[in-house]
Picture 1 (cartoon, rainbow, N blue to C red):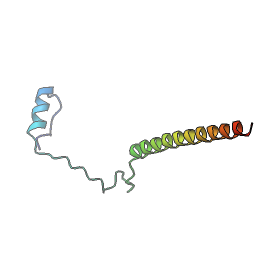
Picture 2: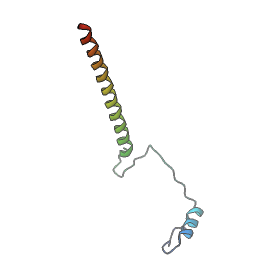
Picture 3: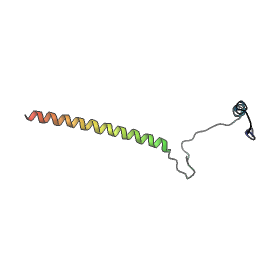
Picture 4: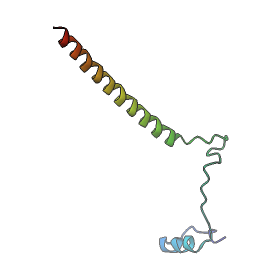
Length: 79
């Protein structure tokens, strides 16, 4: 392999070794991400959780605002 004995190489020599190699990176989302067989991407899951929490908070705020206005209209209508 061209990657043997790379210690002591300059940056340009290392770039040449890397660019001349025949390696291909393949991403497969169906395989496990961890050695224990768990395929959950925690970063992705945490981002989705944060998005869901923000959507929930926005929805609750809007619903509370709607009912507060409705309550105000009903209270004013009784006078």
